[in-house]
Every structure is written in structure tokens, then in C-alpha cells.
Length: 252
Ligand code: PGA
Image (cartoon, rainbow, N blue to C red):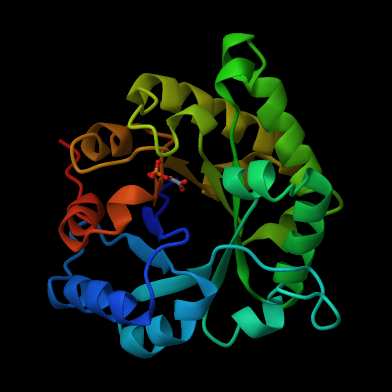
């Protein structure tokens, strides 16, 4: 089944509003999209409004990097899906930095995911193993646990907009990418597990992105793998030229 490619830039805690304008205008001016990929950027909360103004009328989508599961209330510093929805179509959930730095668990991610769906936002659920887990042969067990926990209580029909991002923690921001073969093998295992959970049709149509040190040099070989449907790009999404080259990867 043909799945569309999806290239997303996760800006993390970078860029104020003027830097956001500068970067997005540079991307917009030189935008081409030879693979007809879905393209998305995820700026900080403080730049979402700026981004939505600049990207209005373009093909480029916007995500927030997280959100709370409640709609409103006494949750100092949190941002709700209702607030995010003013500016974004997607929400990244369960990024490894959210899990390791802010203590997000599969259970809180599951609550957030349900809330995001309730508000017709589209979730990008991140999963990934640490180096220690990979070296001790636990990769698949960890990923299955994150999928089972993050998607608990949901059915295939609830998850039509779900996107999965497989990001090995040891490859994030380290310059160490999983080899295309390593990534393909894991993507295939993730897809197989999705089929067990929600059926083969669901697994065949769900986009699974790879993340972790994706750059203009390694993107072509990664995207050539049959189960890799796109990329979640951190560092290299902060530079217009690099990000545009990643969007316009070339599968030979
Ligand atoms: P990186 O980050 O591309 O800088 O490794 C990826 C991510 O954390 O989403």
C-alpha cells in the first residue's frame, strides 16, 4: 500500500518569534516538494501563532511539541489541546526528552493522546529504546510496551490520523544514526506489532517516521527503506537549506 512520505521538523526549545519568522520565510521562499511529502514544523508554544500566520495558505503543517490532557484549569505552565488547536493540526507526544526530562509515562501519554484525538488534532506518537535497552536485546519489548501503553483503550477507527515516530534514544542529537538496515528492521517490527494490535490494514496504512540525527547526507538511504515513511528531524530542521534538502530526499 502506498503511504505518503511525511517530513517533520522538531525545533525543540529553539527560536524566538523573529527567528521563527526568518526560518519559515526562508523555507517558504525556496519551498519545493519533489516527493509530494506531507511537511510539518513543530516550533515552541511561543512561536505557534507566528508560525501559523506565516504558513497560512502554504502546504506546511504545524504541530506543537506536546500538550496537557486537560482542556483548561489550574495547571500552571501547561498548554491544553484546545489552546494548541488555534494554531496547529498535529501534536507530538511521548518524545524521548518528554519521557526522560519531564517524566512523561506511557499512561500520561495515553491520556494526552486520547485528549488530542477528542479535539480532532493528529497525534505523532514517539517511541524509542535507549542504548542500554538495545544492547541488552530489549528493543522490541520496550517498543511494544510503549505502543501498548500509549495506545491503550483505543481502536483502529479512533486512530486513523495516528503517526508513529521511531526514534532510538541513542541516535537523538548524537550524530549517530541507526543504519538504514537497523532502522528498517525495527520499523518492520513496529508495523508487525501494529498489525497484531489493530489489524493488517491499519498497520499497512500507518506512517512510521524515523528520527535520530537525520541529515541531508543520510536521508536518501533511510527513505529508500520500505517501512520508513518519513523523518522526524531535530537539529537539521533549524537550518532552511538542510531541512529543504531533507524534504527533497532522493530515493534512487
Ligand atoms: P535530532 O533530533 O535530529 O537532532 O537527532 C530528533 C528528535 O529528537 O526528534
